[in-house]
Image 1 (cartoon, each protein chain N blue to C red):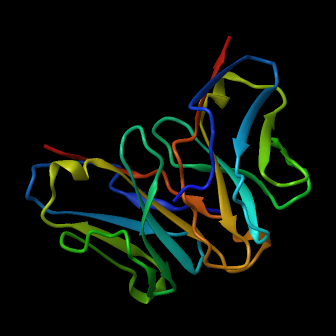
Image 2: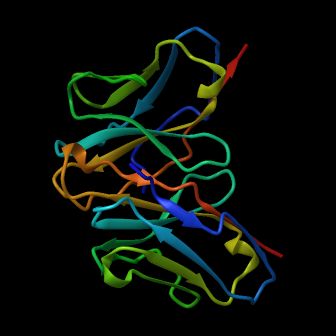
Length: 115
Length: 112
């Protein structure tokens, strides 16, 4: 079974530029999450989708971050304009509504450096 | 917010058992205990979860105290590849949308 796919793996941009990250969840997984992980800290939830609807975006800095999940499958996370403090790993995760404990599975992450 | 407390770091000799403790004194009856680990430069990897009974799979064992206020993750024969940050997380059982809130975890270092 293929895992959660993310791209790009690494990105370096200058502050005030924009960047977009793409995520393809595990096939059939209805729930999709985006997490931000700053160096030395645990991942922090940014946004959660159920199919193509937003369940929770309370921690998403909406003045610069946006996310969408068209057709309830792939998702993109965009940052515009980027700030130095946005340097982090952006993790996508997905889970199914079915199965024991509906375990959440993570992708490898997209590493962002803002200079 | 994370509802667990873990030691920031531990170490273990290769081949020995690694016992990672976690306190979750405010856990409620509908919350599972989950363990994930994160190897450097990779995404978090699911290890095991449990509600109140002890659990074992091919990766580890999970021992939950009777009052459910603490738990221990056991890696029976640690290898160098088990060096990682280990996260203990409580997660709402009742909701299919239950999300994971991470703390800082425990950095486990396995030495030869």
